Image 1 (tube, rainbow, N blue to C red):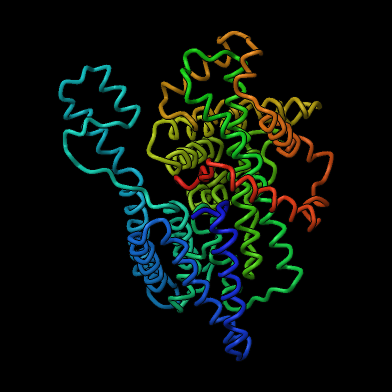
Image 2: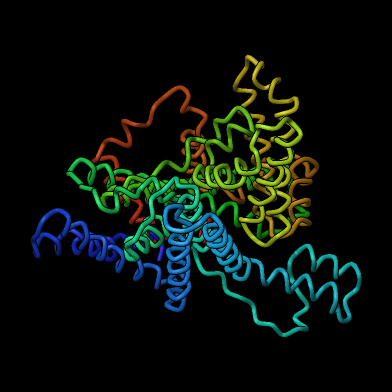
Length: 488
């Protein structure tokens, strides 16, 4: 089930809210009892939500919850010796990363083994292609592992709790069901934002929702739904059509259209989901941190990563970059730490060479900025040039991210520069709605936010309700609806 579906918007969410607020009021009792009952209700609703992706995966998320809750007791500094705490931390890291590797990278690992050791009748060129595409020969007969939705998000969230307890940055959660709610709370379960336990620990036992907060949640949800359905889905139809064609025959205009459409699609898709998650959190009394801050108005790559997928960047900063030493031990160590972080960032996104290259290139660009180019960008008085330069670089890297193979990415990028200029070919891909969505994406993608505010639009309930109705109409007639980051 996705947030941008009719069944969620018209059936599941209204029923969840009705039960969540209705049952505690009917049963009565003090505020503590109501919050405790609300937590149990929301936990059940969250597990039902996750079960839509496969009932068998409830066992997986249950294992993650139990392992990390138990590891928290071992890691708590005031309960055991430091040695026991370290063993508990190592156990949690190995368990979480082991599950993540098995479900996310096992297929890629087997495909690589098959191409290297059991190539059959494949030529060397076909073996190399198989390795870089992650497609095995099937000779071992090992069935493919299906990736559970959201596993990258809830394993990172669970591990952050154990690390924070070990470092005495968060208090131990003794209530298993409260901890289970922290991991499985459905607004942020599938695609984030990645929530740190220490940020919402008090909200699990002390929260209230007034009419203002609830209305703000509705507005934020409607705004995110419109971003997803009206803009991202429309641009996705253009980008998918271009990517499904013969990439070697694309001209410059069409290839750039496909690249920019996907650049806007992934932003409005993922930030729209984050808006809906934050809005849903407000409806249920939780305050989740922002996950995007107009990344396409960035004036450097470093700034881009401060604005894009903030919860993931923060996670890698707090639990990888800083423990490695951060920028405290000279430029050489700093560059090495950046390289490791973005190597892991690429790997986190999936078992494909495209993600690995995507992460490594970002790491090298950040090192390049640290060493030299960042000073030039900072001194440049024409900031619009900086923004356009970063937008172009980001767009080229989204091509690598979107491509199924490195070979396809190289072909697509080459056509963006040597494919010939044929603007009339754009008419084969652009419709009236496509043009409107592209213009809206350009306006609200970050470039104009330096000179205007959209708070008035977000704050107008009538505008948001109109967006909700329009989005629902599009959902009735639309076919494309999956979130890009559900695959991670």
